Structure formats: structure tokens, C-alpha cells
Image (tube, rainbow, N blue to C red; front, side):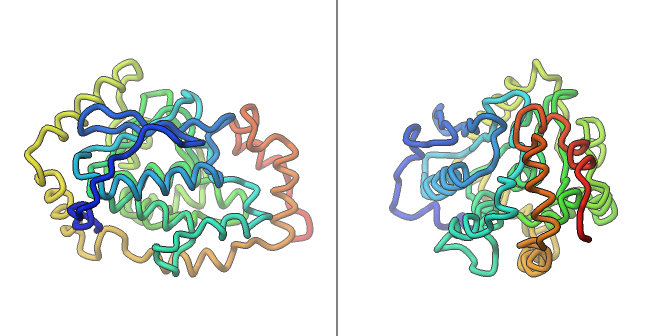
Length: 298
């Protein structure tokens, strides 16, 4: 974990301005990062760059204790990573972190930066989060969701690939091997009750109570004596025999067998975009939309 880096002399605080795809607000030792990239908060190049900036700055912010991640859109926490990367992989490659593990792809690098922040990170979930969007949420230390107003999915197998932004590793750590395979291969949309039952989220909270619940928890943690939460996070991570992430590099190697995708998969995703994927209407029922677009030439 990068926690020791937070004790360097660099004390630049996490700024509140200058972002393109998100907003940052600060209340004492708690910062809130609000994803705000219409129409559906796609994890695209602008969002990835902004999130890299957030993680780099937060890592060295000695006064920051808790970081809350939320969405400005009540219908979409984050739809997924940009589907155009299916047929424009060079744009994704160009986002690589020069300081990150070269064996990981850029989304893995980003999510690992977020996961290894010294601060306690909390994802406050409303709306739909799929694929890269749910992988980002899983990189947080905790996840709380608005009951009956939040849905999670790893639909990548419906797209001809499988989760490659840390999803297979984070998910298995949270829900276990059998349920991880069900989520990945079944590629269904999970409601909050089932996600809570499986351990995908910490807790489903009544929608009208979610903001107050997360705010109270964040400020309670931020008020702990300096170093307590950070040390507790390190100790809990150490309790996992193989480390907090068993083998992200193996996920990267396996994902390279399916991405960049073969032409038949790419052409299908082009037709899916033309049919409404990555628009608000299409994303409300993305799984059904994908099922209506057949493969050709496989």
C-alpha cells in the first residue's frame, strides 16, 4: 500500500477546481468527488485523467482523512468504461500511468491507485454502475447504496470480453469464487438486496437516508486520532493471506487474450453503439440492448 507516501513533505491539498469530468468539494478532512460526465458518466479519457489527478493529489494530502466518491446523476453512478475503446484501443493505451505497474492496463492502474490511497475511501452509490464503473466502486474501501435505486453489473461477457479493470480480482475478494463466476458469466443486473446479500456492497440504505448515513460515517472516521484509520486499513489488508489483490497481473495477461477484441466482436459493438449503447435510453436497459445485437461471423 502507498500509505507511507502520504507522510512526504508534499502537502498540496486536493483542489476543488480545474476538473473536466468531476467536481471536488471539501469539508475539513473529508473530500467528496462527484462524477459529472453527462450523459451517463462514462469512464472515458477525460474522466480517467481527472481521477488519476485526484488520486495523485490525495495520496500526498496529509490533512485528508476520508474520500467519498459519488455521482451527480441519480440514474447513473458510472455507466461503464468508454465502449469506443473496443475499437479504438490506442486511446486507452495512451492513458497509461508512467508511474504505474507497466504490467497493468490503464484502468487497472487507476483503480489500484484509488484502492491503495492512504485515506479511507467510500463509494456512495445511486443509479446504474456496470463494468469499469463498478470496478471503480469496488476499488473503494466501502460501498453503500441507495436501496431500490441502485443496480450493479459486470456485463462484459455480453460484449465478448470479460472484466479487465480489476473486476475479477476485486469481485472474488468481495463475494467469493462461485458468486464471482455467476456475476461475470451470467452478466445480469443486480439490485441492492441481492448485491447486499452477496457482499458486493456493504449495505443497502434507504434512499432518503443515504447522504446522511455516509456523511456521518465519513466524519466519524475523519475525527479519529491521526494515523488510526490508516493503520487499521493496513492491518485489515494484511489479514488476507494472499494480499488484498491476489494477482492483478494475471488478470491483465488473461484479458490480453480477448482485448483488443477480434473483428466480429468489434463490429458487434459498433452496431450496439448505433442501436443506442452509451445513450441514456440505451443504458437504462443495456443488457437487453446487447442481447438484441447478434454476433456475425463467429
